[in-house]
Length: 84
Image 1 (spheres, rainbow, N blue to C red):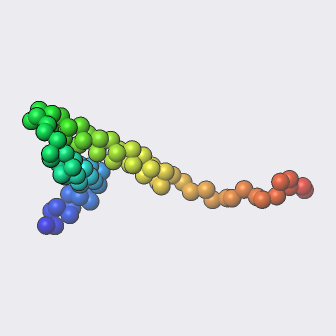
Image 2: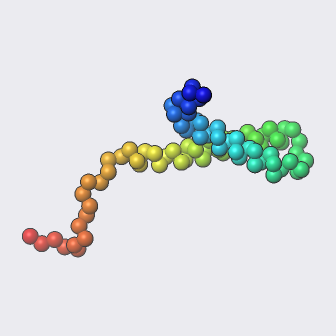
Image 3: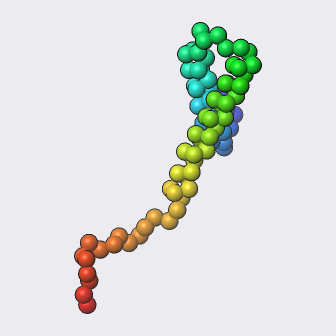
C-alpha cells in the first residue's frame, strides 16, 4: 500500500489521468450499455474517452505553472496620479 501511495505522489498527473479515465469509462459503459455498439466501436470509444481524460488532465496541469511563479510583492497604488 505504501508503494502505491509513493507512486501516486511521484506521478500526480499520471495517477489523475488513470483515475479520471476509469471514472469516465465507467460512466460511458453504464450509459451506453443498451445502445448496441459493435466490439470495435466499443474499443475506439473507450480509447478516445481515455485520451480525452488525458487531455483534460494535461490542460488542468497548465495551471500548476502559475502557482510556482514569483508572487507579486508590490501592489499598484490606488491613486490615479502620484505627485511628488
